Length: 219
Image 1 (cartoon, rainbow, N blue to C red):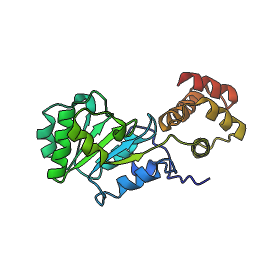
Image 2: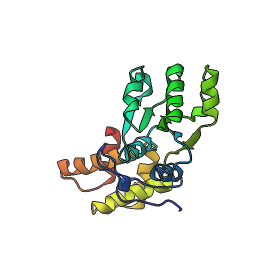
Image 3: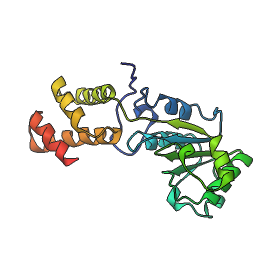
């Protein structure tokens, strides 16, 4: 297995660079974010399914420079004044309903003022069917970096390591059982492990398959 691990998965929404699991599915995006400010392009689209780690990467980037973060559905003309005072703008969850005129103007502002623009989305921005021709032209030349959900091997390692950190002995058959029934996302894996730990302490029950089944129904 070629997956590389970097310490523990975070137990809260306070994401840290050293808490990020690096694997083949997210290595390009992780290395790009950490290479700032030596980016080959100042405008980048990071895309991937929900739970793939986009929010964690964005949090890492926000610790590197002054950023303004906004959901694409909340964009308005007020954003330009706020963007002027920041070095980077992060547009989260790109929507098909986004104001194309505002997005195009922000794109041009980033280029002319040498600012950074990071756009997150579930699919590559190049696949969006924008009506504004000038925007479509800009998008085609943008840098897009994709992230995939973790592989079974990586999920297995994450779960095993978290159990090991808590000094819980777990059999491979239990891990295989969890993998087949848990959503393939970093958030769900983290939620499952935290819930299992708290639930077992609350019940005072030893680790067992029965306990696993009960917690899987909770999340």
